[in-house]
Image (cartoon, rainbow, N blue to C red; front, side):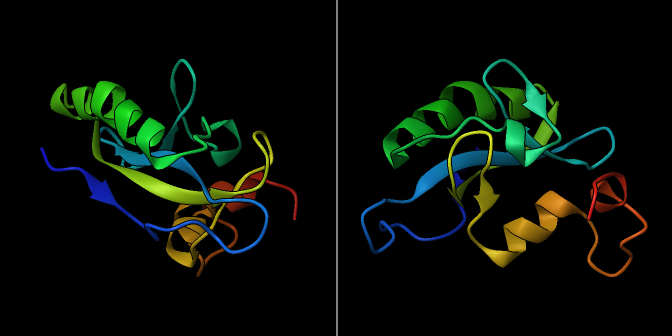
Amino acid sequence: MEICYIGSTHTAPGPRSMSFAISANRLTDGAVIFLARDKWAEGILEAEVFSDRASAEAALTQRGLPAAAANLLVEPTIIDVRGAPGAIEAAHIREAIRARGPSVRPDLGKQARQPA
């Protein structure tokens, strides 16, 4: 299985460098999920945050790719995130939309369950 990267390969300008998380789709229903410390979670706020790409790549190799090989999920991917653990958001629009749910119907998906 090939490792897929979404986002930049460099650090963001300024005093703080880019952080990383791992995203995938659950095979049973297609829901966007994020690698958390001890599970795969539906919310990006639960995602484990990696401060460097090497740590994210190690987690992808050790935890993401085996889960994909076991047919639990598809397309485990390293994504760029910003913010502190527990208050992160996707750094790129594509991943932000995936994290929130469909952009054309705010009454459906994850955004329908979250306060505005």
